[in-house]
Length: 283
Image 1 (tube, rainbow, N blue to C red):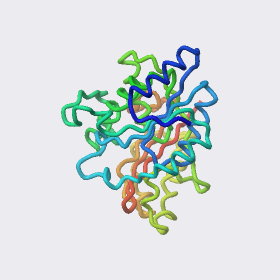
Image 2: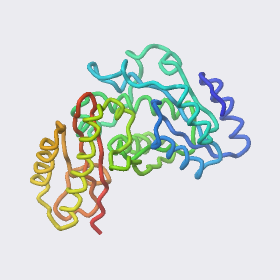
Image 3: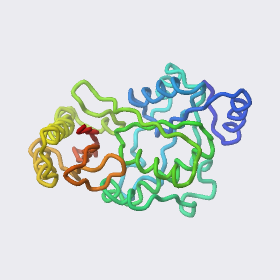
C-alpha cells in the first residue's frame, strides 16, 4: 500500500491508473478504523480495480463544543488494517493540504433542507462541513465510485443529493451497517463508552427493532410510535436526541401509505453520541 500526503502525489498515481483503464473506488474516513470501515474497503475491492482510502479528521464538521481535539487518532493501527485489507493507496493529508488558505474562509458546499433536520438540527453546520470536505476529496481523488456506510444514513442521503446536484461523476454506494454481536452499530466513538455504558448502548438498536416491528404490523401513527420509542430510550438510561420515521428516499415526513421507510435515532450516553437507523420495506 502506497501512502501519500499531498494532492500532487495522489494525482500522479491516479493518472497512472487512468492510463491503465483501471476503475478507482474511494473510501473517505476520519481514521480510528474498525470492522465497518474495513467492510467498505472489502466492498470497494469487489467493485473496482484500485482502492483509495483517505484519513482526515475534518475540522469543519465539528461544532464549537464537540470532540475535535479528543477524536481518537490511531494512525499506525489504521495503516496496518488497511494493508491487511488490500487498499492500494492511503491519502493522509495535513489540514494545510486540504485547506491551504485556512479553514475559516474556505468555499463551503451546502445541501439545504436535508442538512438542517435530524442530526443537522442538533449539530448546526455539521453537514455543510461534511459536504465541503467530501466535494474537495472527490476533486482530489477523482474516483469512479465512493463508498459510505449506511449507519450515517443522513450523511449518505446528503452526499447523494450533493453529487447529483453538482453533476459530480462519482457513483455513490451505500454499504450496510456493521454491528457488534449485541447489535450495537460500530462507531469510532464507541470507544468513549465505559463498560457500564457499553452494556446499555445496544438498547438503541433494540428500540429501532421494536419500531420496525410496529410498522410491519400495520401501525401508522408515526408520532405516537416515535414518542414511545424515545420513552424506551430514557427508561434504558440513554438521553434521546430524536427518534424519527421518515421516507427512505429523501428523509421527508411520510404519509400513512408510505412503503419505503427508514427509522433513525440519535441518543447520548456518557460522552458518546450514538446514531443508528433501520431501513424498512413494507412491501
